Length: 114
Length: 110
Image (tube, rainbow over all chains, first blue to last red; front, side, top):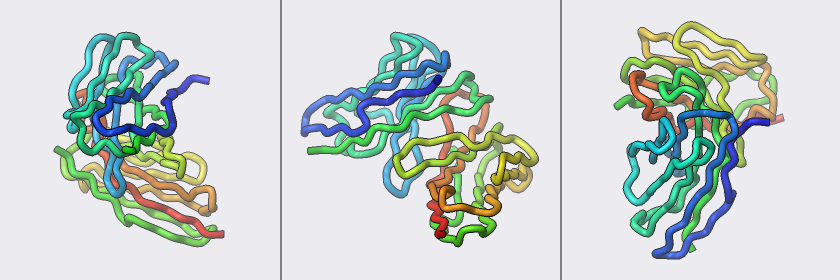
């Protein structure tokens, strides 16, 4: 079955450490997105990519980095510059970068600080 | 930037009740999405609509473009409907994702 796979489901980070969250899709979608979810808040866009080797900052990109070397993969690195990384991270994809079609979501990664 | 407001924030109802969740937004949109988030965190897209009404099983979504308002209805609610329901809008023209409401936490008691 086609879908989006995020790993790991739970991740712990020490102070000053970079961690990378994986997102893989086999839907052949061009557009991919990373969102952050905090309790009591709506999802907020971190980065998005419309096509391989191209990506754009979203509303809260500071302290994060991404790459899009393959169509299927859009990993998110939470750097030590992100001072409050504890959150739930969701990856999504869409067949149409213009969002004329629904987004598909992964099951998320919950990141916590040790 | 579009502001998306959902109401109520929390809703507890008895099995079989008719449920309505509301969503208002501030700026014209190209499409509105209703999403369902289960306790584990994964999100499923329920509807995408830009006008009128859509129905899928016991779920009905309506949108009024002039009033910038959408509703999600659940008929004959069931405990398995318990989830967070999220409204999200796309203002069109760009690929920069959706703007999300904070969600409505629905609990259906047996």
